[in-house]
Image (cartoon, rainbow, N blue to C red; front, side, top):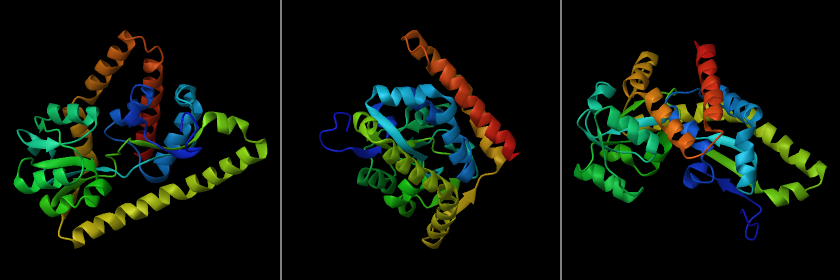
Length: 270
């Protein structure tokens, strides 16, 4: 889509292009964040107040039309876990380099397994004890059939950005009235997105329960303790310093702005 030869518009996942979209990796560095309407508000405000995010996309040859994220993260385990301290000395699978660090700081071992049937097979065989993933992706591969115990919280946001984006040259060539029409459509979608995701989240948890999965919702205190115990701030700071040393000038400024938005959203919820 960057070249504009095959498609003018597509869904883009910055995590899969971490070199060109490095600043976007910061979203997933936060284990806890807002959900529903508050999440939509935070993401829209991030792009409105942190111009480096849009500039990064423009450098990659695309223009953001709609920005969304996925459903909250959950912990699907083969055996019941009283709480997240049970991760210690277990073997788990997750994908994000951030989540790998957090699992390891919790005392778990991460095992790299290609996503899909191999993950389900590994759960069934006992090669891994569980997976840390957004609850809908776990459901999609039937993880709950081999790992029927789920610890979850809406505060455990995915932070995985999904963009509906357009080729930048194509966007720039559009008449102003067409741009405004696309922006109105995006605004209408944003207004419905939070409620829709909240409703779908509850429906998904109910469906998982109906299919035999034991679902336990973590408390706010448990989530906060987990964020502290896995040394989120330390991991973030180390990554920011590494990118600064490699010459990424904007990384700290973007990180601090994004952290401020996440913290402000958490205070409003309290």
